[in-house]
Length: 176
Image 1: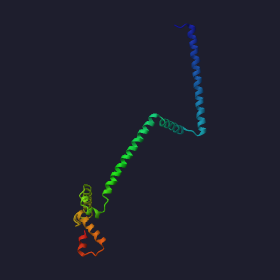
Image 2: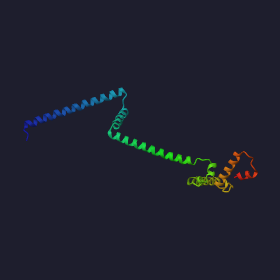
Image 3: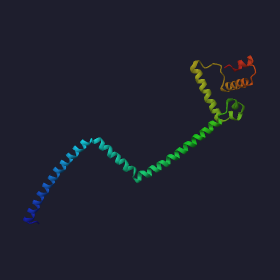
Image 4: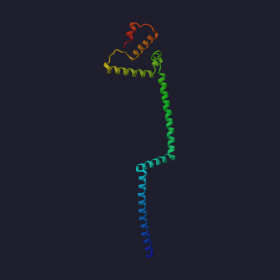
């Protein structure tokens, strides 16, 4: 238990602390107003402060250990992915390079004409040609199959490189 004298001292101290807190609040409020005035004179506003805070936070994050480790890991993964895509691109280029023979070569090379890649390509071209013929004006234009067109093109190419005159029969054969 406290004596009357101790109670009076504590009450006096309590009043003094409350007065000091009130004074400090007033001083703090005055300083905050002064701060706003200075910022206005300098052209600083809330948006600029947010930008500065964001920039500082971004910088702090980039310099953190976790960010550096994550960045390093993702960079390494990106390099691996780039290498993988490069390998796929090289494989595709090689595949197309293998198919890059001219029509004349592919006709004279039965092995290539019987390859699955060529057959798949041939089927797609036939489907596309048939579809176009149907859309353009009917299904029967007498153009023949892809093989017939390919053969007649190769025959025409051989004739034109031979330099000899063409016969009327050959002309009819080349017409689709």
